[in-house]
Length: 81
Image (tube, rainbow, N blue to C red; front, side, top):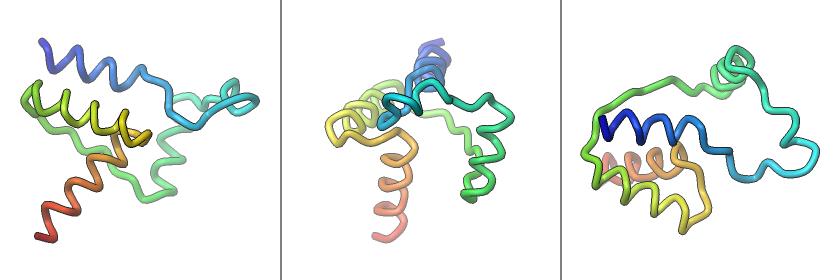
């Protein structure tokens, strides 16, 4: 259940960097899916330990990045070494 709660929090958090006029223009799910596909993004669901998720969220907040960016960066580092 903790994983579901964390997942819902992640889905419902605002994307950093959207301020002013752009904040009111948040695309709906279908539009967001098209935007993601155009950027080459693919949904990738995994189940991780709650403590690990908290560490990733903390890292994202301290670096001022989104969770997707932080996880991608960590995966790249892990795969390259």
